[in-house]
Length: 66
Image (cartoon, rainbow, N blue to C red; front, side, top):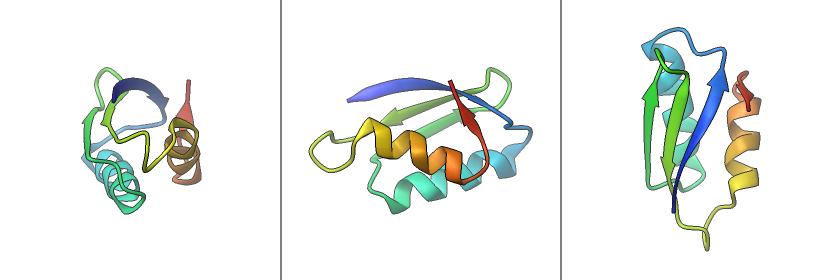
């Protein structure tokens, strides 16, 4: 499943890398971060990780998911 999340607080490439690394650690297949648009496109297997877990992981890294 692929979903686009709106994330507040991302300001630079390092922010995107933090989010990508954290999501990879929980089993997300692919993450594409666009700091300019404030979006994170997440490709994941619903059988392995839930959308709720993805959102919580981003919040734990210090960002707000809308």
